[in-house]
Figure 1 (tube, rainbow, N blue to C red):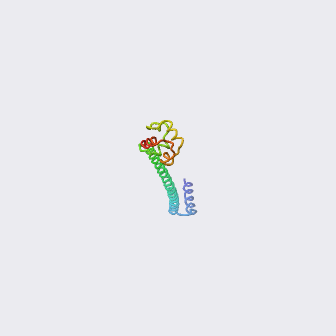
Figure 2: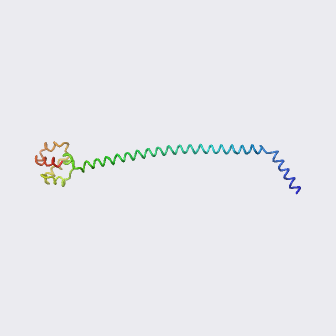
Figure 3: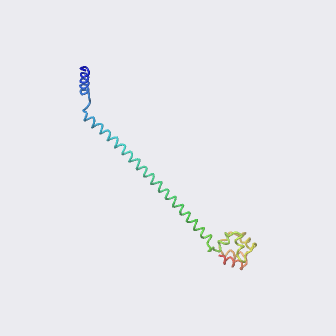
Amino acid sequence: MKGFLAGLGIGALIGVVIAPQKGEDTRRALADAANQRFSGIKDDLGQHLDEFKNSASESISSFKEQVGQQVSNVRETVSTAKEKFSGGNSLLEIINEWPQERLIEIDGIGPVLASKIIENRPYKADSDLVESKILPPSAIEALRKAA
């Protein structure tokens, strides 16, 4: 037992003699190193968070722009469809767009006149029908009534 105690005392003496600093100083140095690492990690996380926020903001802006464009396209399509399928067709729309079957449904327009209308498409103005003299005045009047 004496040998054990002697070895313990010699080890403690050598440890005190060759130790680079006091225990309190070592603990303080370890705490400072840990704080520096924590600050570095905190700064890195802050930087990555800022990058993520910027990227997300750009993606959201791009998405909003694309959705806005799609909404505009849908509104335009709906508006065009309303114009085409509403009862208020212009004479120019009728003579340039209606198929032969629909033209024949107009009183005073038969298959022959409907074919003449289709053959001479497109018309730039309503007056083209009158000037072309392809249709008789009664057929032109029937088309105007359909408009």
